[in-house]
Length: 179
Image 1 (cartoon, rainbow, N blue to C red):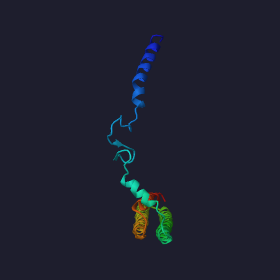
Image 2 (image 1 turned 120 degrees about the horizontal axis):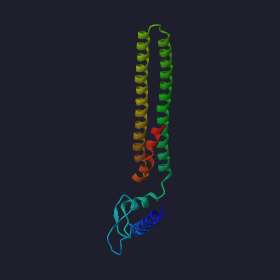
Image 3 (image 1 turned 135 degrees about the horizontal axis):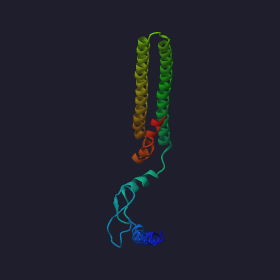
Image 4 (image 1 turned 135 degrees about the vertical axis):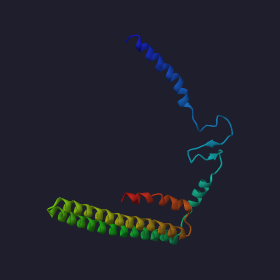
């Protein structure tokens, strides 16, 4: 054991001598050259002092929007969320009715005296439940997707808003899937 410890210490020191210079390098430095450097913004090449297209779009986005444009966007947002509320309300109502129907059908199935009849009735109840639930969910998803599609069209119709502003809002579209 005493011979093993100095050996492990020597290995640890050797590895640290090799690893420290590797981790100390900065991958964004040009090492004194004038070559483009890959940066964290999507791996695009930039030379120092150059403005990228996204920087120019961001500069345009800093311009103040008119009251009419802001109202236009807010109206589009209200229409989108109202349509999503409606789709989810319809789904809730359909799901509640489907669960009630399933409960009634399963209770009736368990009231049957023969195993064969009971098995057939239970199978039928679950099959109808799955079909009805799938239809309700598909209808809700379509309503949600249609609401977002219409919102994007309405948003683009608002004068003065940029594609970047639209994209910054519509990237949250996936959050509605979690509802």
